[in-house]
Amino acid sequence: MDSLVGFVGKNYVLMAGDTNAGRSIMRLKDDFDKLVQIDSHKILAKSGEIGDGNQFCNLIIRNVSLYRIRNETELTTKSVAHYTRRQLATAIRKNPYSVNLLLGGYDKKDQKGSLYYLDYLGSSKKINYGAHGYAALFVGSILDRFWKEDLDFEDGLELMKKCLREVEKRLIIGTRCFLIKMINSDGISVVEKVMINSEKKNEIEEEN
Image: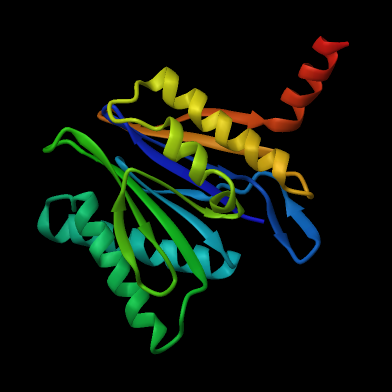
């Protein structure tokens, strides 16, 4: 039950993903990081089959690193998005990957962050905010109402938590934990590991 959310703020990109790894009705682990670091300023958030996601992300990471070593320069987020889309589109005709992605990055040259939506069919679109998995069913209206350009970090973090609380509230089978990461000029950092159930418990205790 994957849930990915991401949006662009003022000089940063904020991304979140649940940490559950499961198959069918079984939860296999609660500490699975779905926000994969490509390089110092880019994250590929994955949803779909675990094996396909791991294999495809490793393919992208290795080839981006190879390009950097051969050419002594880093690819921009836009370039990585185009390359990733091409790999997905090519794989459809051979051995398709069952994986959907959000690509977030910060380009030092442009001094701004960007976010790309990609799916298993090879579609690619630059967006201001987006989601994959079950989160996409619920958070679109929240982001459409509360997201704005030049959103500062404090307001952005509150908006992200609002989205994650909505996902937890709407799903019958609860998601225990979400990992939030930020990309800015300083690189990638883990902002917070949000335990939604703990927040609920604290709210109930305060009411009582």
